[in-house]
Length: 255
Image (tube, rainbow, N blue to C red; front, side, top):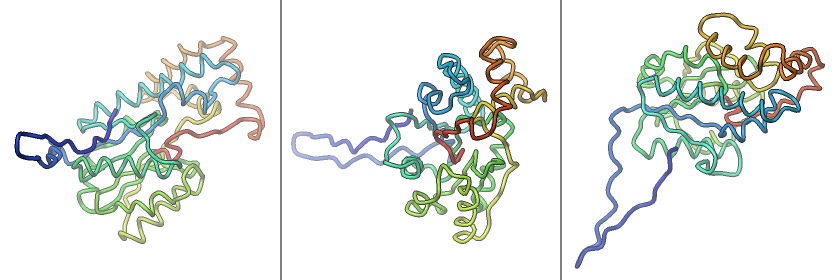
């Protein structure tokens, strides 16, 4: 977990040393994993209605998949969850996480959340190159959110970013509008689904393409085909949309 530290002063016999400059990162690009811990995520997203233990296991499985994915990217990873998030609103917390990463010396920061099952298909080097060419990068979700937000430090406007309509279906369009107005162009990646509700979970379990099969198989083992937990989920997939709670946890922007 990334934590921001205040300046450290060393006192000698007759001198007060100034704070040391932060070390220059070996890479100019970092991946910012901004999400709830699984223990909090499952309570926001009850993947299996009424079965808290299984919902927690689902959240843990998705989170583990994301952590493994970003660490395989080859870029430094900054994990910001739980108490490391600073701010009253989601927008403030994500903006502060971006600011801390830039303060640490990174020029390009790629923020992602923990709920996109096909995140491993992202071409991280291509995102790095786009940011270096001056283009912000957005990975949209079908519901109007985002699963990835890539910013160069020259794109970063803390006040504007904090006040976007986070955790709403309007976020993706508003973010693109802001970045295009400020920088003229935005690189938009392939749209990818995230997992926020039981409907999303069951849709993932029904997928068979090889890229998501290992994750889907792990989730099936957690749920157990034919068990009451999964049968409940399958019944809920046919329930009216209004009957299925959709409470999003960070990053609801699905960054």
